[in-house]
Length: 87
Image (cartoon, rainbow, N blue to C red; front, side, top):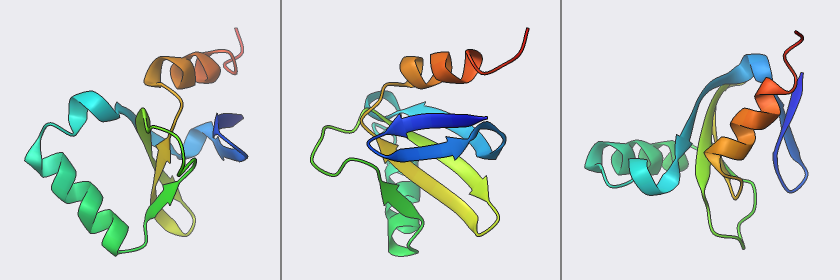
């Protein structure tokens, strides 16, 4: 299923490796280093560059690893993934 993560960006739920809160995870130097390295390697997609980032979604695509910086909160993205799971 497709999950909307902000602006005009959608990814499939089977590509998602993890969804992380920007405020809580970027206090760790290792996370900041990881994001900086990914940006230098062209692996970062800033979904809404003019909005405050609230989360980042780590995904594994056919083209490789991608990190999507999103203005959508972790809770909202999780709710969107849960609503796509058949009961």
